[in-house]
Structure formats: structure tokens, C-alpha cells
Length: 99
Image (cartoon, rainbow, N blue to C red):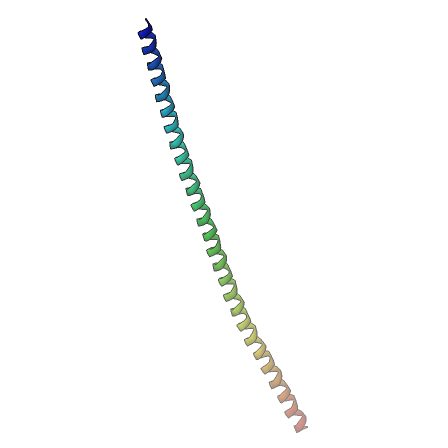
């Protein structure tokens, strides 16, 4: 009877130890999975930041090219307007000389 009780207690202790071992293993697996998910989330975050930086750079490049094109066009238009003004003044001066 005492032997049976001791055998039962030993078996119960082994069962508890096995359950604890399985619980710890499950906890460790969950902890590893959590770590992997956090790492993946951080990578996605960094990729999104990088994509935004590239997108902003491309937008600035497009805007800069547009501003340069507009400045070139404006400069050319101003040159043509000044040339027309000078030609008109020359023409008026010639007419005044003839009269």
C-alpha cells in the first residue's frame, strides 16, 4: 500500500514535470514567434520608410526639372520680349530721324 502510494506520487510528479516541460517549450516557441513577427514588422516599417524617401526624392527631382524648364522658358520669353522692345525702339528712333 505504501509502495503503491509512493509509485502514484512519483508518477504524478513526473506528469507535472512533463506538463511543465511542455508548457515551457510552448512558451519558448511563442516567444520566438513573437520575436520573428516583431523583426518582420520592423523590416516592413524600414521598407516603407525607404520607399517614402525614394518617392519624395523622385517628386523633388520632377519638381526641380519642371522649375528648371519653366525658368528656361521664362528666360527665353523675357529675352524675346526685350528683343522686340529694343527693335521697336530702334524702329521708332529711325522714324524720328527721318522726320
